[in-house]
Length: 355
Image (cartoon, rainbow, N blue to C red):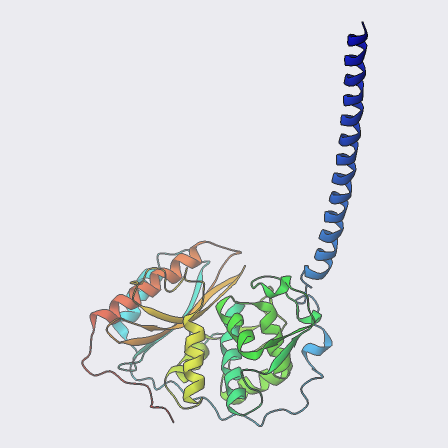
């Protein structure tokens, strides 16, 4: 009987201790859950992107940190166009005719060997999406060459520049400085919208950049809003973008060092689902993509394994997120590549030498 009572007492003691342990575990789990929830709420407060595209802050137009504007820029070198490639134009029109009428292509192709070209709605203004970052990159390197800043200038990441959409900087806390060269690289290679806003602000704001674009001779290029510009108020033309790329690869508008640095950035673009997608693996594509609901595009310099080079800028206006736009860009890109590859001239036009 005593032995039974001892076992019963031990069982009750064990159950009491187990109950206490369970209560302690529940309390700890509750405290931990509360802490995680609190940290999540704090993180959301700091990392949730500001919808800057709805109402641009005053600093977008009149930045306080830039007091002296650059003098008017010398115009970019125009594309030295010769004859339009009628055969290629016909081939492209046949391809484009197979797509729905509600997909409107805008393209400009320029061959850097014989200076032939094809333009299909190439001079029209079209919603830019992130391809607007190409002329911003050009202006960044122009300001480097003019001594306005250096690649190692610290640019402060402010909270009003934080932007949703592409890029990872939006998830980091504002109030930290970044090197200009890193901001420019992220703007292109991961299409970081926050970095784009930082550069716009650093270089004088939208009005100043628009004046620069106008003086550079970019007739259809205009910044109308902070990134991301989901409404498509930022506009470009495909001929303008091809002119920008021509002046990066083959003129002396920028210094040799800036041209090479710009090419390195463009070659590092992560998104390869459009122009490069169907091209052979050894093809080099230095490019920038852009994607909003109503407009999808890609502009870049293509360097074939045999050394030939050409510029292609293509933007497709579309019903919201229509999948056919991406297929159209890939198909046109491959058709142009095949046409250039089939004509292999013995003499190539080379880029100007370093100055």
